[in-house]
Length: 444
Image (cartoon, rainbow, N blue to C red; front, side, top):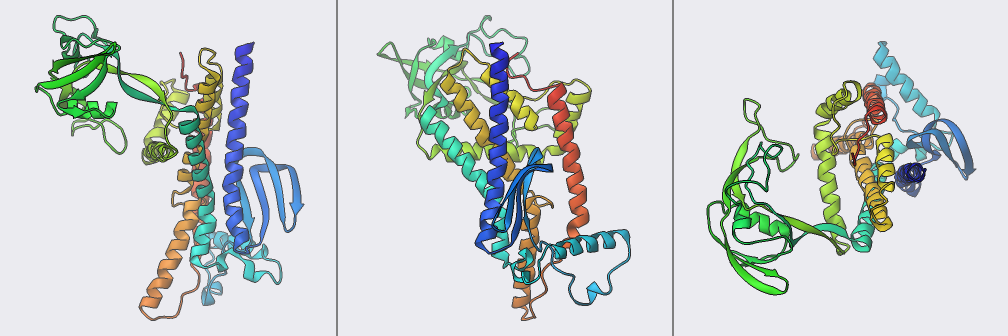
């Protein structure tokens, strides 16, 4: 019963965190829209039927039934068709659809408020209005990461050894070989290292971090390295001889395995000694939040770049029972399930659970911000791209000393908007379905 309650509490925390993130994202748009005197008629969190709303001044604020997004309704999102094109527009389905959207935008402009239409803003102001949402997500993420890094601390590999293996295990044999049963000991074990030893210097270099240790060993296959370490307060010296061993090659940008022309994973020869680091909780400076932000951003960009592959994997997991990638994408349902699992960890301190959940809120905001910057309508990035194109056209006209062109007819992007929105809905439904029938299980 306690586990069930903890799981439900975790899900509720995820729902509140996501809802607040969406609400603050829309606040970013709303702030700049009002700052530049755009008439905003609605600020809504969610879609579908309205659950609650209230009117303050000229804006209606409310919450809708489906908490999968939100919007700020601004008047005059699309400019009127310029000049003769308005009279000579086509009669096809797409042309009529575009004109209907343009007309609907015109109908949002009350008499006498034409000067407050969104399309009339200078390019830089339109950019700020649309970038305001993702910017708010990034600010939330940085704040969450700062709380985790400075208040709770971050688990970091230290220079103290957690494990020392007896054997060198080649790539591809990790699941079958026993790292503690072999005839030839690993370089670390042969050098006399044991769990609990603390590394001090290697190859004459004072060690700064575990990453520094790995960098030296990786490029030192077959070479002798002078090692200084401490054990129970006493300083010892040893010779460490990294053995050449093969490891998979990973792409530095996407983190995925690099494959050769035949589709087989590529291998490289690196130094290996056979020890593992002991993790410790380290309270970092607020600046470390920036590093956490960059790491999370790389992970999200990797998901975006590989989205077609991810969709196939999610389909296989949802309909064919394939194993889920614990580092793969999740829906809002998946975030709730993961948060619920974390809340059930009774052998983990409340502080550590809280830090993990706050970090997840930060990660969700990084994902929301970056996903919205994809340059396709109806995402914020689509509006940003349209504004940039409009600015480029006006700049080029000035270079050629020509009259300033009419605002870019962004209504022409409405067919793209419908297609992209449909795809996003399908992908979202697939991810939600998969997170229900085959959720990621952090602890099996």
